[in-house]
Image 1 (cartoon, rainbow, N blue to C red):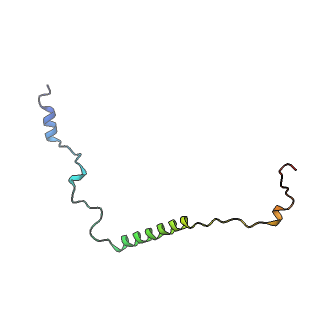
Image 2 (cartoon, helix red, strand yellow; image 1 turned 180 degrees about the vertical axis):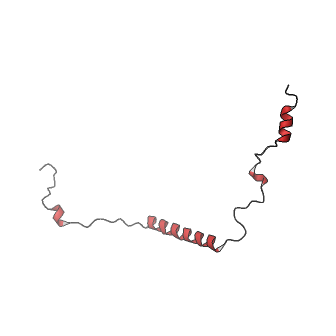
Length: 79
């Protein structure tokens, strides 16, 4: 029908969409970390631990009672 035009096109233009699993040589982390990377990871870890501790041990802060603000208020709202 197409006289092999599609097969010829595929031969001239191979598939470019190769799977990422074919790139075994790509590594997110090389065997060793640089000092900058290590410093960033340490700072991030310390900040994360600090934030978690602040959330866990969050104290409920109640405002101090002001005797002047309670004067003249009745216990029932309509009277």
